[in-house]
Image: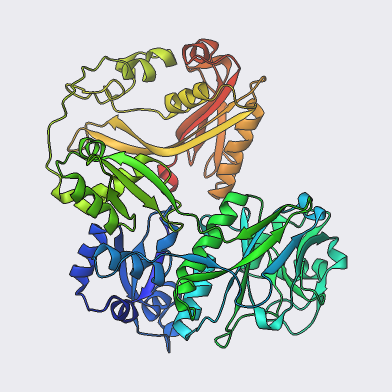
Length: 562
């Protein structure tokens, strides 16, 4: 879940009242959020870098709030405050409008055919007559970063560029050129660089180096120019310094280039809806025109509202409550989903705003109704359906692996209620083999691993059993791949800083294990103790898990290295 850091006093000022930490924690829970931490910039630096580095840092109290990954509208102070105020019925959800320029033609972004090789899509919009303060500016920049890390998938799907419109001149051209043909002064730099030089410059940049791989192997790089040839940005890496925004910026041109057009529309909608409240005419966004290489023309942002219809009975049954249709409509309206009871008195018409791209199904609406009702207010009931379990887990850890259950040190669960939980697992291997079986149609080879606990009987423990952390990996292909799994073991040992050797290092020696093919199994020793086995699985094991290709496996105890 993304974490949003907001200044406590600034948040309370925007909400119009103060809360105790406990009160705000409860409010977050009611709204489906979690107050994860109460801290300060100084505390964070002190914890991560030491007290010396923290000297002079801010003592302002920060609330770190965990937000659901699909609620992009809550990733900044503005969206968070708006959502909470509507939830507390202190305000109505605003209505966002796309408007035409008061004078002249809309800003135009022309896409050339060269972009098809790298990032073929783009959308744009203008925030006209906006007023920034330092806090608003910081929130504006931070929202871009949150979106980049979340819905934009670290800029691979979408990259956002924001520019001071008064420093540039449209129409704008989005094209792609060989890196040596692109030359401009990048953000916060004092000299011009070619795109090739920039890629070398940013290889050591702690922030931007993570995005270089997206385009560095492409023959052409995407770039946006204004009508005078000034570079606005080289997405998804860096903006130009010429058009950078500041506290004095009044008109912001926002462009999003993308490999996924749907995601680009969502990101643009989020950027403009969160900050259009600071425009001279609140909650309005000036449209921009995007022209594709084939001549098609689109106006953005879409700011699309759509309506869904569902019954009050559906929500009552799914949530487990018994509320009137009118009350359910009120609950949904509290979640920024304007709702009205239709003329038949049974159906509810729900309007989905452009900020709620997470609502894609009636179940999403039902979830919001449950949240507004209050999960703690839903009466607990006994399930109406009962099922009787059949034994099968013993087969997974014993029969299918050609072992006797009495030799597995398994802990048996009394009166198991589900089929998969008759015994606690003693090995991670069956789970990986089942996963292979469920993905047989995927391209070969298949490589899987898991690091997790198993449970083993241990009479020396007060509970008669112990948890054991293990690493298990499988390689599934047309050939057994013993060398692949052996190489994996060597790499693991290298990362654990265990050198080859019989005494203080690690080594393998031939072993017999019924789960493995005779002569193709080895026992692994580290620091003189046996820690696991590797080898090619027995054909009978493979067939019992409904597999048809050879498979090699590694299973080791990693607790000695923790």
